[in-house]
Amino acid sequence: MFVNVTGGSANKPRFLGELGSLPQNEIILSEFKYRRGSEIFGEAEPADYVYQVVDGAVRSYKLLSDGRRQIGAFHLAGDIFGLENGEAHRFTAEAIVDTTVRLAKRVSLAIVAEHDAAIARDLLSMTASNLRHAEDHMLLLGRKTALERVAAFLLEMDRRLTAAGVMALPMCRRDIADYLGLTLETVSRALSVLHDKSILGFIGQSQRQIVLLDRPKLAELDL
Amino acid sequence: MFVNVTGGSANKPRFLGELGSLPQNEIILSEFKYRRGSEIFGEAEPADYVYQVVDGAVRSYKLLSDGRRQIGAFHLAGDIFGLENGEAHRFTAEAIVDTTVRLAKRVSLAIVAEHDAAIARDLLSMTASNLRHAEDHMLLLGRKTALERVAAFLLEMDRRLTAAGVMALPMCRRDIADYLGLTLETVSRALSVLHDKSILGFIGQSQRQIVLLDRPKLAELDL
DNA sequence: CGGTGGGTTGAGGTATTTCAAGGCTCGTGG
DNA sequence: CCACGAGCCTTGAAATACCTCAACCCACCG
Image 1 (cartoon, rainbow over the protein chains, first blue to last red):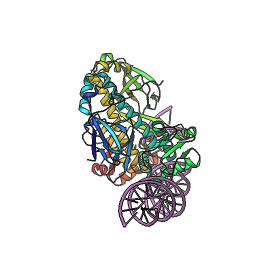
Image 2: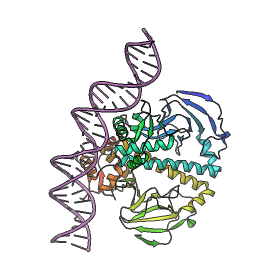
Image 3: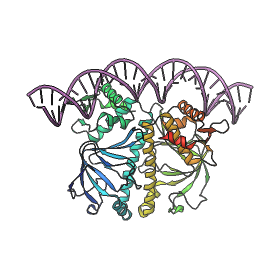
C-alpha cells in the first residue's frame, strides 16, 4: 500500500462533522496520508473503515471490464466517504492529489449505533444525502447535454470549494469527464465555450483555477 | 386526485416485507388504488407517506423544465417507494398500470424508529439499497452503450419479475427509454437486435412479454 | 370501423467521440 | 542554466452512435 501513517490520534475533539455525538475516543483510529494517484480502497474490498477527508481530494469510481470509468463522486475536505451498509465497498477510492484522511472502524460504528439513536440517525442521514446526490446525478447523466453537465459541475464545485471567489479544481479534465459521462475533449470544449461567452474566467494558465463571472447565466444552462 | 379508497385495513399481518418488526396496527393506513397513468405523488411535495406496491407497477422520475424525463426506478409488487429522509419527495411517482398500494404515515415511522433500533436499521438498509441501485445506474447511464443498457435492463427485470420463464413488462418503450437515458426508437432497435440474435423472444405481438433465450449471452453484453 | 396508443423500421441529421496535432508548464538531469 | 520529456490541456477534422423525423403496422376500443 502507498500509505504513510502520520498521526496516532486526532487533534480535533470530533471525528466526523456530522457525527457530532460520537464518543470519539472509541472510534477514531488515526490519520493517514495518501500520495496523489494512490488507491485508498478498492471496489468489492471489505469495508472495514469509514473515511473523512482532512485535506486533499478523492474520487470514487466504478470500472467496466474494458476500462471505461464512471466517477460517482468527488470527496473534498470535510467529506465522509467509504461508508457502506453492506460488507464491501461499492467503489474504488483514489487520492486525486496528496490527501490526508481520518478513519474510523466500521464495526464499532455499527455497535455504537445500536445503542445510540442519534448516531443511527446520522448514519441514515449521510446515506440519504449520498442517495440524493446519486439521484440528481442520474438525471444529469441520462438527460443533460454536454454543456448542461459542465455547467452543473461548475455550480456544484463552486458551492463546495470556492474560496475567495476562485475555485481551484483538484481534478483533471479526464476526471471531470468520467464524472459527467463525457470525454475529456468534450469537457474542454464546453469550458472553452463558457469562457468565450464570458461566463467563466481562468486564472493563470493551469486552467484549474476558475472564477465564475456570470453565475446566473450558468444556472440557466444547468436546467 | 385520481384515487379510489378501497380498503380500510390491510389483510396481511405485516405492512412492509422488510419492516418485519413494525407494530403494524399503529402504522398502516390503508390501501389505495391508482389508475394507470395517475400520479401518486409529485416531486418536491411533502413526503407524508411511504408506499408499498401491492399489485401493479410504478415509475419514479424527474423532469427537466423542457420535458426531458429521467426515470430513476421502477417499483414492482412488494417494492417500497417514496421513503424520504427529508421533508419532500425527490421524484414524481406515477402508476404505470392500474396499481394498488399500501401506505404508512412517515412521521409515525420516524417516531417508532427512535425507540426501536430494528426499525432504524431497516430504514437504513432500505435507503442503502436504493443508493446501491442508483450507483449502479450511474455507471449504466454514464458509460454503457445502448445495447449494454438494454441488456442490463432485461436482466434486472428478469431478476425482479419473471414468472414461469416469461417476463411480462408493465412499462412501454418510452418508459424503458427514459429509464436508460435513450430514445424509444433506440430501445426498440436494440430489442430487435437481441431478437435477431436469438437472445430473446417475444410472446404474442404485444412485444411486452419477453422470454430470455440466452441469458449467458445477455450477461456478456451487460458488462 | 375509425381513432388512438403502442411498436417497428428506415433515412438523414447531429452531438459527441475518436483520432491527431500542437502548446504550455514543470521537474529532472546533463 | 537550459534541454528534454511527461503530463495536461486545447483545438481541429473525421467518424459514429444515437437521435429525430416520418411512415407504417397492429391491437384495442368506444
